[in-house]
Length: 140
Image 1 (tube, helix red, strand yellow):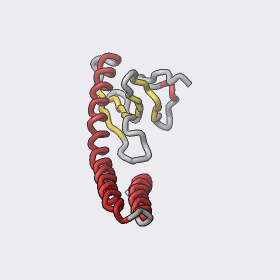
Image 2: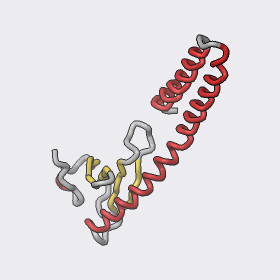
Image 3: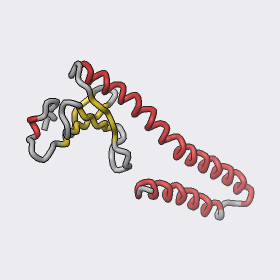
Image 4: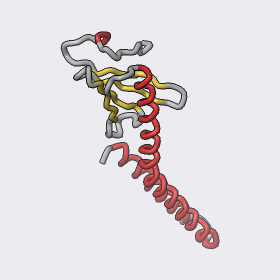
């Protein structure tokens, strides 16, 4: 399990434990209501951890379609493959593109609602950045 995931789970657990600790100081009549509220918090946290991966996959699919349309317009007739990094350390919406006519090069695109932008390039050892056939000025 990735350290970020462990931190998120421990934070959620810590919140529940903190709320349980605060219940101890409430009058007996209010404890029942507070316990129900904690159950609601637990259900919300479980829902968050269950729905978030599905939400990310859904949006990644949409962004892949947008990027495919963009690349087909910009580079007509060229073959390419779109992938993404699966680690939690990377932005799930940065998509990697590999063109069939340019082996070893990896172009990373950021796809947002308003724009599609090339944000990074993986260059083979023996070539320069601007030698890429699909290099777009990164605006540095």
